[in-house]
Image (tube, rainbow, N blue to C red; front, side, top):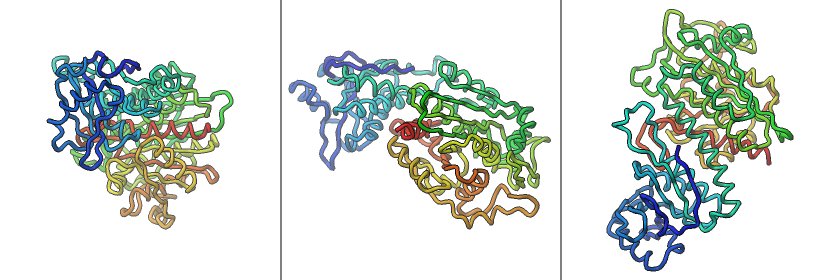
Length: 490
């Protein structure tokens, strides 16, 4: 794992394979930042290195040049940013570390004062340096960046050290989610994912309980059992409990964990299945965010549930037309077995309501319609109360994760009527993301503030890497959930 350290050594004197310098663009003007930390002669040399490569340099671009003795580092990476906001610096640092893949040691000149900005740079750098090489042979694996050094006059300040430590804890959680999402589905069935969460929690005060298929059957979890009955890998329900002393609120979390989604008998197209190992990203985010909150000792009680199943076609799979009885007794006619996530969530949302949390949030890669509505980088937030929904969106903004508030139009409920059961699992096609949210709302007790996050797009990046976001699992929603816990703790 990449380590981050702080130093008061000036950027020109620090020893590293590469030195990252920020270049702020304002229209056609470029300003080399952190120049105030460097001798005038060094600044002159660095500007001489930058000028020939400036060209059409745009925000997000990185230019790497030999240092030619201007600084002790062997190379200099100029990374372009639009401003000095935390997210802009996070993205620029991530872009630089991606381009510097293979350099063992990288130093970064922190361009602005403030512990939060230094922490954002550290987080972006670590996330940009992320690689998933577990399945590559040694001959095809580039050496990972082992050490990132932040050069800042405030390196010795307690506030800077604290901000960096907290950012590292959250970053660890994001990286853990990325690793789980990127793991091939054959190596991460529900039992293996449950075991991975238990191992991850071993150094925390979080209690982990796991329900097997027999306990699920005794408990009446018909949605989970229906989704999982076509697979040789049985479903699992994982409960994480964090009860700190003097907790200032109770946060309920539910994560969708379909470890592979073939669509079941309503089979997906072959190309649509390729990325379906990511369908457990909500459960992974809920688990790792809960553990991060515990490690940060945030005084908020958390009760989290992970609904884990594999959706496969076989002679034992549920059929279109089958009727399931969910945990709270509601019967659901399955019209499409590829609308399986809401069946898992129906059971577990009803279960989570029994804990009477002050706020209940579910996180799921639930619908393709979410990507149609908001694209690949913005999550949707829906809920039974506008104030609860908007509170979570505000936390997402504070955590710099893109999220947009969406409605739950009551008129869509009629399209979920079944001719033979209480509900059908699909309804009106137009606004399918909202219809799925309306379906879930049927399983939330009145009086419990509930927010549904559909993260189908931002949880997995099918395109090229950008900023600190790699191709593959992104770890989306961890930062938002941690921020929600901070907000509840005041």
